[in-house]
Length: 252
Image 1: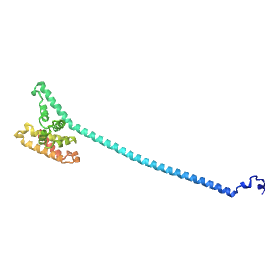
Image 2: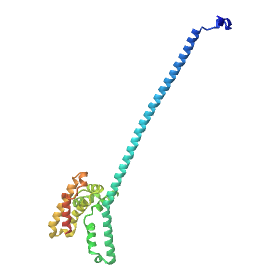
Image 3: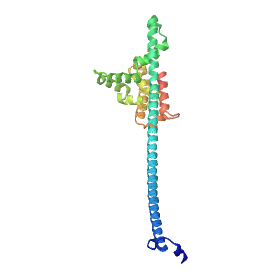
Image 4: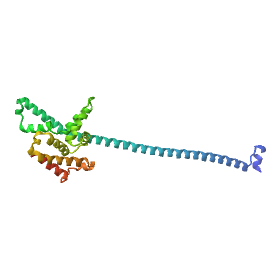
């Protein structure tokens, strides 16, 4: 009663305490709802950010794997290319050596005529000069293919007849890095077929045995798989035994 006596606020402006409490409650409720909406929006934004980050990580992982695969493929290609070059160099080395023998023989001829050539040199130079030299012959035909007036159609039949395989087969064998024994086998086959001393009657039996052994080895090698070719002349194998026997007959 006394508080009302000294309260100067007009009665018409006074708000009952219960009504004031309700209004404050509504304002707090509105603020809480607004805060909850804000929190929900931030939660959704955070979830979307996490999803985007996960997708970005997945994409980065896929791209990283793809890059690793491209790098691995490139390294594998380079390794294969290097192996091909090394095989090619190994096959071409005898070609280079034989060329030096030919030139050495000529230099001796310039020194004092054919009689001045060492006997061993004559024999070594006659084989590639007058017999078989499949590496050189393949190179000759390949170079001829690059010319506008190629004579491959004229050279190929004689090549196949003496070596026992086509030019295309010989080229593939050389490019694949054929064992030295196969290169020698192909050359020996031609040696005994075309060189004058092997046409003598007393060498007929040996020549026939050598040619049959060469044909066996060439045929077996042609029909073998890539894996089989890697161990074709393995120690104790039939091909190695036949090759050694053929080479011994040729050198007798």
